[in-house]
Length: 383
Image 1 (tube, rainbow, N blue to C red):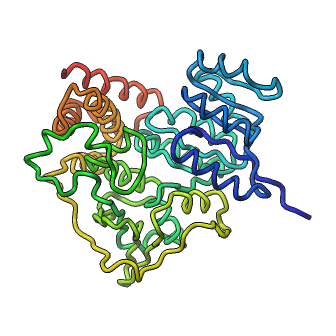
Image 2: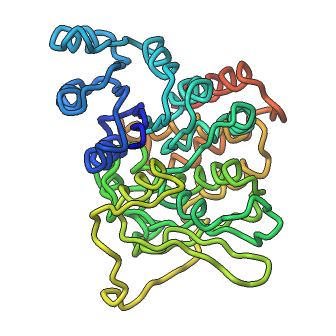
Image 3: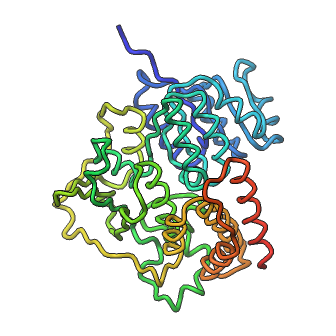
């Protein structure tokens, strides 16, 4: 008897992760069916996806765009509007919800997804940074698997077999170093948004590209890894590995280490998150190590990239500190992209807001949302 197709909802289907997820699904139509797709406002790309994958539900958070799209679609497809519409779609029973939305806006949909799905394939790190304790507790209660999509977290997930974390000495998250790795610290002040977005390895959205340039992305991943793998901050290190071949590594107490290697193609971790615990042929280029003369590894420069230090400090403080870090970073990145502040002002802004914050050790959801709003307001008062 053939297996039933897994019903998949993709939040953020028009972004890079969403598009790659649909590419994986298109190669495995006998295993997956698209139940729902969502976008913020890119209805042109969404319309093409709808025609190809024929989902039952479509959610568009921009209400005007949602109304325009609804007029073009068959009445059999339910168009859900705004944040409430997105919540309604996520509440539908599904096998997998792919969290490909960027930023803090994914927090409430993710909490809603935990109520309705069997598995969350996670490409959004901000939700766990803001409210890791709440999300992981709820996922455990509901017996919902959270499987990471980001290549570094997926690598750790693949290398860790046992649930007993006492066997782990340390985990290493790798970083490409971003587009500004070889620029002198003195010149960082003059970096333009256009230069900072130009990542040497990955094609990503503007916000995550800036996070990669400041290395805040690795700081957020450090906090995310604490929750995903139930490890303290001092057991997580960062390695700069510009070839992006070794995606992360786990070191065990006996001195052995396991690493996951692959060409830099996001479809590999995406497919694994959808098929876990199975592995399927991907049709993706194989890794040929003879093509690489050297695989290099070095420590990140915390002085040149202070966002990484700010993130590690927030991770150690825990409680509400990571929420403040994330909110202040999002607002500072927006200001940089709008050319209201310099590149080197991003960590200065975040540091000032963190310094003003009074730590809440065990915040509830209402407190997290209030603290997030407070931090954003504080950033806006600085310029």
